[in-house]
Length: 534
Image (cartoon, rainbow, N blue to C red; front, side, top):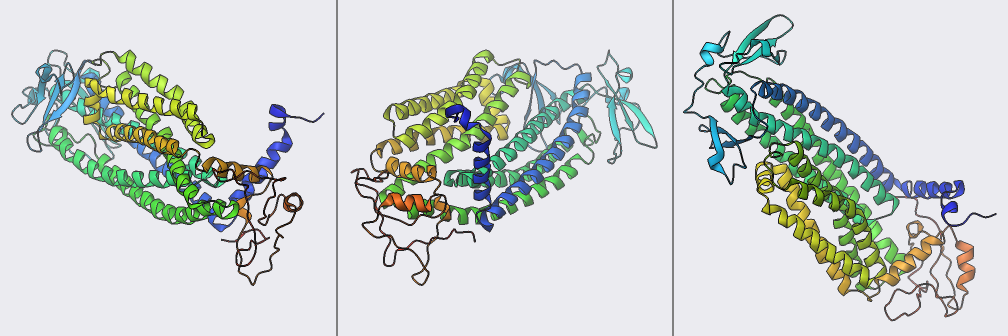
């Protein structure tokens, strides 16, 4: 008995045909092969580099957090930094510092020097070490009455035990918060690069212009951020020296050692990789964009108006695909911050934010699918639901700024601020482009997409066609030819254009429901051989 429906979809034969189709699209020409190889190499190279950065950040974060933990600093305190270079201050606040400064206590500033440091420290006042020295907090060396923190520093050749002033772990609490944020950024980048590879694969698999635009936009943003990250590391190194490692700092010990130098070297590699990926990706994407954006129109035939409307449809899909990564990462960073971050214990109505994030995450995929389907099928009911939910998402995420914790995190953590801003921009853009597409319903886009889908369903792929000059041997189809004969003859390979009669109509491209027609003659002739070369 012949399998149909769900069973036939998962049959071995169906999967063989699917894999064959994927292989043909990937190996269509040298351009598609180069694009996929480049995407694989860049993805795993960046994934490896970000993993190395994550390991580096997590190692120093653990040491710093141990020192903070020995200081018995309450989890309900939010660390904040104020002032400019030369006059930086560290404050610990019982509420969000930006809105309740009266709840903050200054634990270190240039005018406040550790008073018990000389008495509690065993060993030299300033200790400078190289990358071979390891710091290990030791509670047995601390002093409960003075609040001093015990630390052991050792290498392969020697070790030294000393105690730190209580101001040191208080000042280091801000450093620990910063390193925690950096670690979360590393995880986000690892996920983003593998998501980028999936989108690159789908761009080749589906011959998709929106996927290519998504990849290109993401590479540009990644390159811009990697350049900013180099400046940020230099900036953080300066205030780390003033707050915790300089001769007039709270700790007077070089805890980070080679951390900033090592991270700077990796970040330079990251910039080079991202810039190289952007340049190569731009070149390959432009070549593919020209091919993908014109081939279907040249093969099936469409008016300039339909071609213009198609661009808005591509823009909607590009925006929706970017939202998959940007919105989800923004939500993950925010829910992590209000769950285990410094503001976790001072955030009011945190359960509402978690509920909103979970609801958005669950409904994001169905909403994106609804947007695609509604525009693709020109469904009025569907597009209205899509736009209404887009407006609701914009309102909800704008309402987040009502939260003191959200505004503080937005201000204090630039990486989160960028994702939160990008999320709002993309949500607004999806609403605007959806509205533009709705205003262009009935102008021929649906008919064109139906015609293209019908050709692909018969095994006729637009990408295998190529145009030749008049000197090439081509087969012209007479105007009175039976299209069914040529459809059967060329099915699965190359199909020259033909003109339908009313008895064998293919899907129309035009709003006036005229039959899809194409006459190959004179200067407009179509080749019968696949385009297998770049």
